[in-house]
Length: 251
Ligand code: PEP
Picture 1 (cartoon, rainbow, N blue to C red):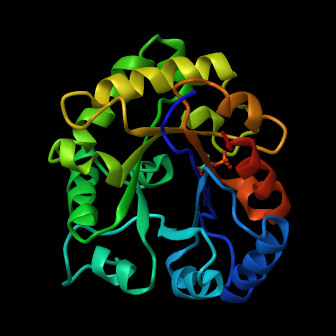
Picture 2: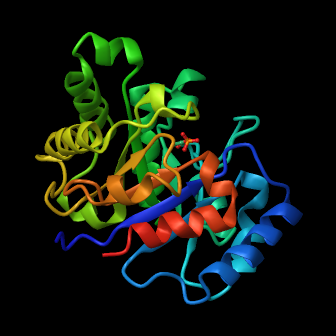
Picture 3: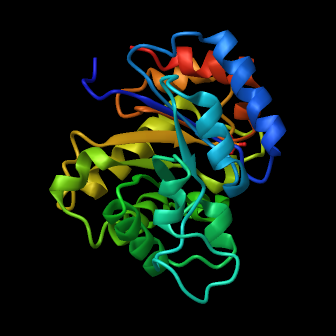
């Protein structure tokens, strides 16, 4: 069994008001009153919910993360939020390079700058990569995800290994109900891990799988040797379902 502690993170995307965030926490804590020993739990509400959810969690063993940050510390960037602002809400980390943000114009260079800015501000980072269906069918998956990982880690070295995780999220599996088979997810997560070598300690970094993970398929995915947890979108909005996924990641 791997010595890496799994992480299960819920990406709420553009869902939940503050009241809904509080209600989610209340329901989730009832499902897993002590958290889940051996699993790190994270929830990623929209910016508007960070402080509320962090406060609602209190001492509960789960952390709050944002869904992105801007790389500049402050200035004329209408609509953006800096790493220090996120940190000041009580959040402890951020997702970066999610495919939905890349589709909206976030480049590899922006992602690399944001990774560095987040780490410098003391945030944990979940760095995402993933290929389109066309790229998978053309046999380009490994080259593409490796390029994204190398680009995102450009300004990072070994001492940051424990402060970040990589998330492999095939674009064709996000929000579509089409999950990669456990074998397919394992194969690409191993390639993602290998791509990180030279930048960080690849044997130690946590690699998560994301893409239509749910309460039914989580255990098979989490059982793969190079999968150290999940980044869960739609299914994380249901506290009971998310709790089942968290349990499935337990060693
Ligand atoms: C995600 O947004 O990171 C994700 C994996 O979404 P879903 O689980 O809904 O496919």
